[in-house]
Image 1: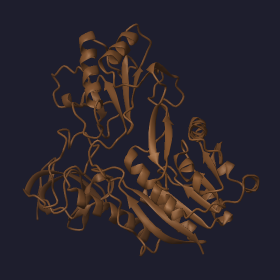
Image 2: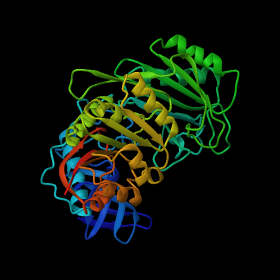
Image 3: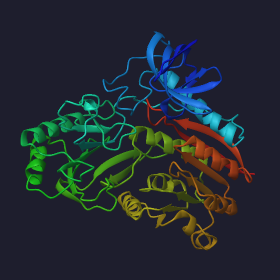
Image 4: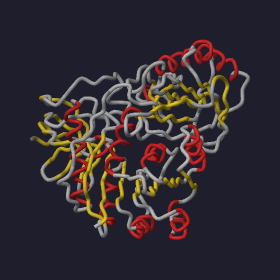
Length: 471
């Protein structure tokens, strides 16, 4: 290893990449300094340019490869290395799974000091391409490709935000994460906007017409398209008519006029232009003898990998060991997918969710599936889950909790401990916050089986299920 210094750059030569790390980066060591490097693979040997240095770590980029790792594979997307969405595309799938499993184990052992002897092998995704059922694209007057060309005319871009830049968008011609007609719709819409000279949204000036495009697909073949405009215009109806005529596959064509300064749609009125106001997803029941159907509206949260969601819920239900006499609490229930999935196994399911629209979806999905032993409540988990609430709705025998990435508030954890439910099944998309919460729950619960589930191939993200058994 040789270190070279210039006035503006610090170059380190012949560095071996050691292992995969957080946020899709990999780790190298320069003397005793830990260096985080994106878009490389463990066992690559590279020259690094260090561009940010702190007391305990540094950030660098690979500027030359001396040898390539045997763990490498060819990226499936020509936007790899710039888009930032799938940072592990260049690592073979078996290695991705191994590092995700290691990530879960490391967090549980280091943060929770948990016994991981009953950890099961990670559940791989059946497909590594076109597994996402939802993608959101952005129109912007600021294109990433012109950043280093001061003389270029920037006509804007229609694609994904570049990591670290709120106003820069990378033009996307092909994304391998969602099945067609996703790419075809996006590319057609780009051409239509160009022909009609429809202005893209300028986030700094809050001007322009074209703002966002959301494409949702389902395993039933339904396709939902939501076009988000930044202002009212006589161009809206012709554009929507054009999409309807050119893409008969679209079963739900929606639109929204978002005149706010942010892109969130939770408080916006999304209108149906053609077709249904929802798409439908289906899932095989736990016993394999039936089928559950879920209505998904524009604002409905549904697990992004539909096929893997079914496996995730099946594994969670298996860990839960629910009997016909059990009262089950489903915390952070969303649109009630888990609650409705386990309803046939139990006496009663109580779902709690912060978002009122999601609770409405959950009730709708119970009705849709003719399920009559579920009840749902909307509100802040820490305020709703009280002793009085438990007295009114029944003390839980089993609790299934699937909180957001931030995990659970300590007050919620304390209330879970007070219930002394026979079993808690904790599902998480963030192994670090899950381990933090498990550490607290271990005062009354022993860690049983653990099962990571790969919901997002080619990314560092991993879902994990922990079985907690009352001591």
